[in-house]
Image 1 (tube, rainbow, N blue to C red):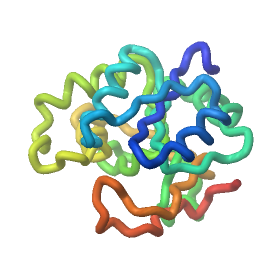
Image 2: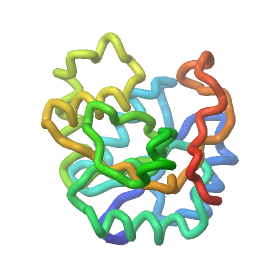
Image 3: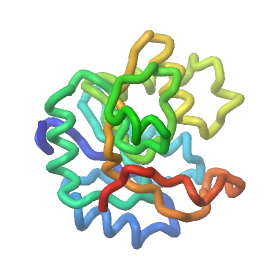
Amino acid sequence: MDNDTVKIILRTCAGREVWRDCLITNIPELIVVQDKTNNAMDTFLTAMSIAGNDAAVHIEDDIIITSDFCAKLYAVIAKIPDTVIQFFSMRKDDLTIGSRLDYGRTFMMNQCFYLPQDYSRMILEYYPVWPQRERHKTGYDILIADWLKSRKEKYWIHVPSLVQHRKCKSLINSRRPNNRQSITFEE
């Protein structure tokens, strides 16, 4: 897998231009989706629409990427191109078990994840009928978890994490802790 077959889509918002520009410099093929409505779910759904039927890596603007990010990313995807892959994790099992399959219902954190062909479109189509749509207005990781659960599908957690979540205030929910970092990230 390479940049000819996998889109890399960045979701970004105002005030994070320095982080966005750093990612653009390091990932030249990046497709940038700028938040236009001050609504994280709208921006997420726009990214899903842009991915369409293509395989895609979805990333957020508040990440730091590992060295040789694209080479590492494409190497993992090439091994399991038909599986959802989570490239950021904060779980204790990361240290004791390492990379592994997990139940779709456990999917969380959207800093950097891969969706195989057609998956972005299918998640976009699932959103209008998603039972928790009103309850979780910005919970797009919960949306993915529920969608995977509805399909009885597992996903791959890759260790070490290829991205690190920056220590910063969440723009979605300022009450979230700043210390949501991966314990396996290698810079």
